[in-house]
Length: 96
Length: 482
Image (cartoon, rainbow over all chains, first blue to last red):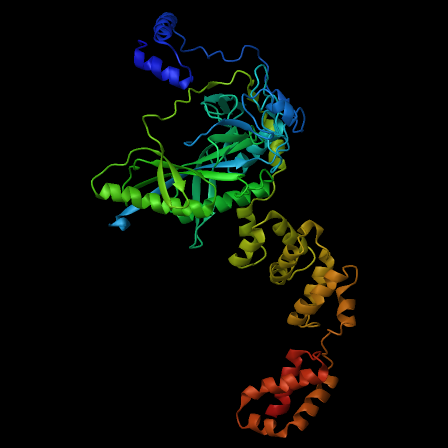
């Protein structure tokens, strides 16, 4: 698989990034190199190997159903780029 | 347009908000209606370096629903990230189960208008989290975000495309609402958004085996909207097919003010969610013994009680439906039937008196003022003819509610509601009435049998309403027809 300009634009949109032309060129090269590495790895037969997702073997890290750990509204809103007394504020979203 | 040639095929994705006290992956309060952004934490706000931790109750609730529907419970559960950017989703991804949903398969019976039962197959049920709430400012070019709802646990129930009409969708949604309330896992309140559904709608020629191309109508939060949206969408699709067009797969929005659907997004900019395993949540490995424990705590299911109320208690389907609508009502009926054998009378009493009274006085049946033994005695007084049914309903019942500690028999006596079935005294009233009205007696004897009601009324006046109507009728007839 080759990473072309269209795919870079699509990834740029999905990640909500705005890249300059030179950044796009550089990324295209990097991503193609990563794909070459992955293609190399794919030469190995891994049919019988379960994908490794979790590094440690812990399971069932539960929480009991209790209310705790909330922060107050003032703290919640303080890092927001824009907020009112009660709400986070963002540019208007029309479409869902 | 030949609309009759086509049938509508519908599958649902039902979102149910679980009634846990805290959120799915953090301890924020989930109560509805809190002041904006007061039920949040660094986890639900999506701050870097925070770790989600799953609420055990949420998993128990999911298993409970799966057991009720006869689903296979998946013992090894994992979570995935569904990635998209939207302002009500602070993390930039929703935690969901894409690969390994907790319940697979199962069926839910729905009752059709015809009285028949139809089984709707469940594809799967998975756990996920809700997003926050967006409000649009009509005066300024901004949107306001309340994250109280962000991270509230949801179950998504995905059905097979087994539904054929808006009526069946309605039946499934009501049945599902009833079930989740029986199971105590959600309040099923559509107005507050505790239950909402997306409808996948397609049409095909009747008799065709292939499914047509489907469109998904998003976020229908009331049955009325769902009904209208499905009707509109069915016609829209048939109109396209009949004029030689083809349906393109779309996500649609329903606009209640115009009653129409319109594309939310097209295939070209379809979301690419780039699911991948959620590394922050280790797998859940459920034990058979825990599942069995949850199974042992299951309540009787609404459709089983609906059957049992007809077979075991001999009730008509209509009564059975009313009495099983809410779990507390069904339990109340069964408890009352431990005190009386007159099941139909018990059903009548609950439907006509107990439920309306509880409703008007905003009390729950658990806290109903009149005890079950007293209600059973009330039924017995009517059944044995000691108090006339109408009098009992109108006068004795309110008196019992006033003074729940007194025995109904004593209250009936104090109110002079006990019917007189002393034949001697009745005879005296009867002959007094006949003597006082000779003209009516002769008209009756010439064939004007309708006058029996007049004599009856006169006896009732004499006895101040305490004459046993059955016995009085018999005595009157005997005297008049002699």
